[in-house]
Every structure is written in structure tokens, then in C-alpha cells.
Image 1 (cartoon, rainbow, N blue to C red):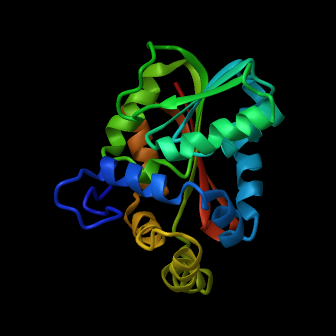
Image 2: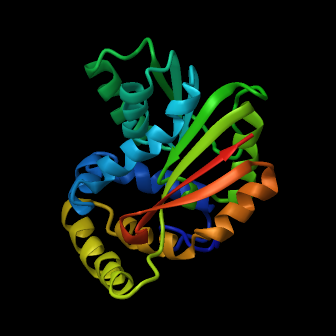
Amino acid sequence: MNENITPYQSQNATKKEQVATMFNNISGTYDFLNHFLSLGIDVLWRKKAIKELKSIKPRVMLDVATGTGDFAFEAINILKPEKIIGVDISEGMLDVARKKINERNLQHIFSVQMGDSEGLQFSDDHFDAITVAFGVRNYQNLEKGLADMYRVLKPEGKIVILEFSKPRTFPVKQGYNFYSNKVLPFFGRMFSKDKSAYTYLPESVAAFPDGEDFIKLMDKVGFKKSKDIRLTFGICAIYTGIK
């Protein structure tokens, strides 16, 4: 993962700090743009990813890079856990998540807090399952983030990661590249006050070590039975692993 791929050109802020600033800036329009720019397919991706956890029936879950909470809400609907904690480095995104939690009266199940994926403030072997949706490509140190999630997962616990991928077949690859590099930044600039955010997105996807490279990294930090499930012609992928 190239740490030089950052939202802004600042020389004084780390990637982590820049990502937090970016999500603070776009938090108000994030949900709308997510669904609009993916034509609603992101909802189906989340459902499919969460269903990877049905067999283990997790009771206590951690949602890393929870953002506005959509992945966690889907987990609550499908898995009915007793407790789910969401962590994120963007206070702006968490404010949106808290509002949605209150609107749904889910305070007894779902709570959110500021948190760094590379230094999770939880004890070892704590969670039955961990989820991450569209977050790992934003990690400053991907291996360190994976290792810390492995640490707080219980033995035999499962991790499910949903992340954008790079299509490799014609003409999907060419169409995807045009959409990512031209269409997405155009609408991002139109609806968001942060024009850099939707230029950073395709750059971060291009730099992300997807597929077999990511599986190797999961294996390196200790995950077992790691696998890669491709969605929608390779535009997105679900990665799973067992501790």
C-alpha cells in the first residue's frame, strides 16, 4: 500500500490525519453520494458481505472505519448481535452515525467512538467478529492495522472486509477506469465541498494491493482460511479470514 497516496498535497499532515480531515469534510453528503455513485449496488455488497458471518452467529462485534454506520446497521439487521462497537477516525462521520443510531433507537446495541485502526483500544481476544467496509485502503500502515484487528479478535473469530477492487477483464476494466477517473470526480465535485476526496478515491483503489496480494498480507499477520470473493465483475471484493 502506497502511503504517498493521500487526499491532499500537504507536507505537514500524515495520511491518517488527511483521511480524517477528508471524511470530516464530506460527512454530510457521504451517504447520498455512496448510493448515488454506486447506483445503489453498495447496499447489495454490504448485505452479501455480512452474510459471510451468519454461520458463526457473532454476539459481540467490532466495525472498524465504521463511518456513518451503514455496515453495522446491516449487521444488526441480518445477524442480530448483542453488541456492536464502531470506531472511526472522523468525528464528522461519527456524528452522522450517532444521529442514525438515535433515530433507530439502537443505542442499546450499537455505539460508536473515535478510534485508530492501527491502535485499537480493546483487550486481546475480545470480539467474535470484525467488519470493515471500504476502509482498509485508507490505512496509513495496512499491515499494522490488520495485525491489530487480529489481536482483538477471539480465537476462531472471523473478519470480513469489503473493499473496492480493480477489474481486470475487457471491457469492464476500461469502463470502470473511465467511470472512476472522470465520472466519479465530476459528481464528487458537484455535490461535495471537497473536490480532492473523489479524486483520491480512484487513486487509493489503484494503489491498494487487492486480490492475492491482500490475501498474502492477511496470512502474514496470522489469519487462516483467508479467501477473496469477487463482486460485480471484480469492481468490489469480500475478504474473509479466521483467527
